Length: 228
Image (cartoon, rainbow, N blue to C red; front, side, top):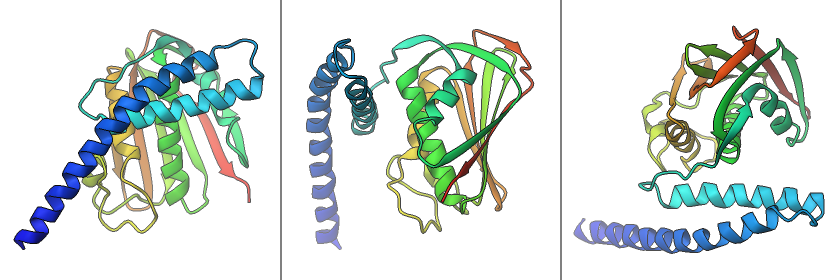
């Protein structure tokens, strides 16, 4: 038993050392990727590829250095118009929109994309190929985003809020990162994140500080269906 405990301690120490080194390298690489992504003379496909790589590196930087605050590059952004542009990058996805509105805030575009990616990836993974809906609206000074999917992540959702931990009863592959990361990004923006499941559906709720809203702010609904 003592040998097993010692081996586990060594594994954790090695993992932490690796993550510290990864953090150091990512700090350097992110700067290089940002300069490449901003080059106007670069081909549009190259800029898109660099932007995607930059997003992945920022995500890894947060995962590898969980105690450090997330650095946000805030800009004025309409959440409602941002979502269709973001979803256009997904393959084999049909999107239907109901309602019109503008939900304006000052958010980090890259980290907001990461938050959406993690929530939608889980929704499609555990949703058994059924429809996923995203509903947006305004509640006071907060923009509210709900991602509703069929199926459930686990019988016990508490494990999802810790890094590298997963809820009990999960069979689908994963690393226990998505929900933890989405919550961390929402909180870094001054918002909040909740997750609930009734056994047949799962709803992720994200609240983000809102600058102002116009149009039918009661709800804008996006219906997402994956094509074979």
